[in-house]
Length: 266
Ligand SMILES: *[C@@H]1O[C@H](CO)[C@@H](O)[C@H](O)[C@H]1NC(C)=O
Ligand SMILES: *[C@@H]1O[C@H](CO)[C@@H](O)[C@H](O)[C@H]1NC(C)=O
Image (cartoon, rainbow, N blue to C red):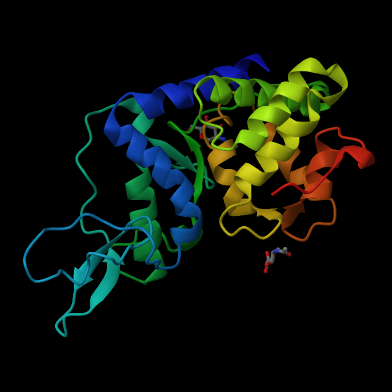
């Protein structure tokens, strides 16, 4: 619980410090739906000329940018140059192939270049690269059977703490969750039930389809993996029927809830 909670506080503090970091972390969530497709629901501030820039309402996925083509249509192309960095070691990211990239932008730019078969692509296999965790790749602590056995309880407890912290900051965004948390605080039996269900709803947003997919898990695992080597194997194990998504039933069971305690609330 300790290191999970520390990781969470760290993430919160990042969100509060520098606006650049905040954008990156907000984008981490958008990344899920934007990686491979273009979406039009985020607005990107572009220049404010009198003639409306066709790129204005045209959002591109991570590693991509909007360019106006000859027919004045907006198109998404791989980003030509990622922003300059100030040398913060936490800008670096580690990919699922255990390779360090200079930043999230560089990782998804490379993925884009490789998908499009560009000459600038460094390795063909990078067409499928994605974020594993924040920071440089390193030797992770092994997830032993003992650590794994303690993990569900540690994680449920962590979610309880996260929910409390968010309530303090008035960032739970829904009165219903605040009330349920209050119930959880007063009843030890229920302590873990609502936080576990809340997190499921929080993760299942892109798309909201009552199932948490691999990509929807990235925002919860990426900041935590360096400190908690069990989180990934643990969550992978939650997909009991191996269909690539975790349902609320699988999620609840996996985090130690009893059958009667698992409810759909999102
Ligand atoms: C990933 O890379 C780091 C740093 O190069 C290395 O120490 C570690 O052993 C690698 N992990 C795996 C699973 O290969
Ligand atoms: C589950 O995963 C598959 C493929 O990974 C996807 O097509 C499907 O929409 C997902 N959602 C549900 C609710 O099955």
